[in-house]
Image 1 (cartoon, rainbow, N blue to C red):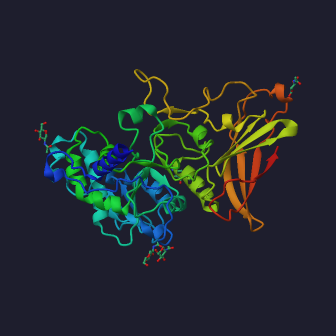
Image 2 (tube, helix red, strand yellow):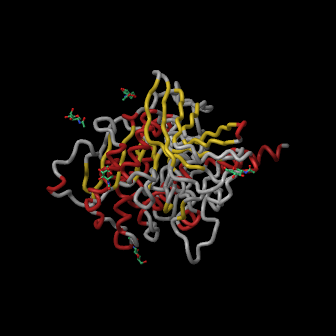
Image 3 (tube, rainbow, N blue to C red):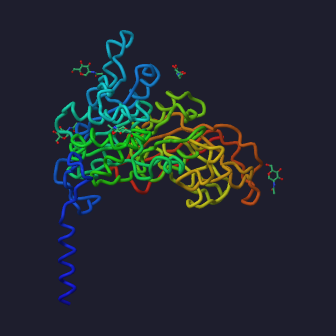
Length: 444
Ligand SMILES: *[C@@H]1O[C@H](CO)[C@@H](O)[C@H](O)[C@H]1NC(C)=O
Ligand SMILES: *[C@@H]1O[C@H](CO)[C@@H](O)[C@H](O)[C@H]1NC(C)=O
Ligand SMILES: *[C@@H]1O[C@H](CO)[C@@H](O)[C@H](O)[C@H]1NC(C)=O
Ligand SMILES: *[C@@H]1O[C@H](CO)[C@@H](O)[C@H](O)[C@H]1NC(C)=O
Ligand SMILES: *[C@@H]1O[C@H](CO)[C@@H](O)[C@H](O)[C@H]1NC(C)=O
């Protein structure tokens, strides 16, 4: 017994010792709390709101004309705080700078950085450096810094609600993975992907402001800025906290299969808008984004979240991706099956040397089987409106004919004549909506 308590005391002592990093004293790191951070601690400070967040977006003058509409779709003038960091000063054709966009800053000269000559991907060095530049802006009462790309769209209200769950006085790094196994393998399974957007708490940002410049010299071979940042955060003793609502979208083609099976977590971001098809088949890219964010204005907490219900007498299943799509199946199919995305998209990298599994989640593959009992009729949202003062009406139209006979095994009830669907949902009273009741009306 005596020996046991002595060895416990020794373990305690060992744990108490600090560690220093490498032999070079300039790499010495601040000592961080060794105890694990609780996920949802009781927060005594005032609730986090939009004024506590500073956004840092990286852009380029050459592509600004095209990307501007994506940024302005989520930026709220005089409400959101932040900056867009450009690679050079915008010329006269872009001035005066619009008040509907984040104010611009010109990135600092990175060629002066000691790490510069050895960096394999110098553009990425500029991007990682903007993390320091946004901090040096010195905004006051900041709790979180959120970094994004210029082809990222955010749902600000959900982001605020998500960040409000966490204790901003802790060292937190919140984001998500790539959807693709090969991307995570090539870069990292542990980092927050930059295009999806990620959040850094103020204390972590402050710590990074002291170490980042030296840290990036250690990683000249890493190819992307988010990979370098993830490595530098890891070296400070902080691990990524995963939030599923961020979406890196390292995908190509039609991502409607993914967006129609969104997990029951608030939708936070969408990236790579130009590498995918417009998310609404009858609209172009910027119209599509506006349509989705328009629905989010009616109910940001529910947007995209998948709900499933059944019409038993005719054996139909409805899968609703709120504000986005409705699928009708002429069969009774369980949620465990329908929550797997239809694999309508392709991975970022495919072809020679790239073997499955491609994705970090299970999919329904092939997405369309030609079997009328498992292939859906797809409808996409056109419009939203408030009705009766306390309900939201969303209207959906058919994408195209399914081109199959009815599912005979479940009674031969064809949904082919349905052209339009209305979904009526109560306006949520709290953001903690867990069970949703919709009314679904179909029109032929
Ligand atoms: C956000 O919270 C602060 C208190 O931390 C308060 O002073 C401010 O008015 C709030 N702003 C908004 C937009 O709610
Ligand atoms: C933002 O505020 C400024 C100063 O109060 C005002 O001049 C400007 O019109 C506002 N911008 C928008 C887009 O509301
Ligand atoms: C750059 O790489 C060379 C060769 O590997 C190395 O000797 C040098 O120390 C590196 N410079 C920096 C600043 O890391
Ligand atoms: C998308 O459609 C809108 C409305 O029809 C149009 O104003 C806009 O120029 C289009 N955008 C692109 C990139 O084609
Ligand atoms: C199913 O309906 C089609 C017409 O919609 C009909 O031709 C077919 O005979 C029906 N099959 C069964 C098994 O009832």
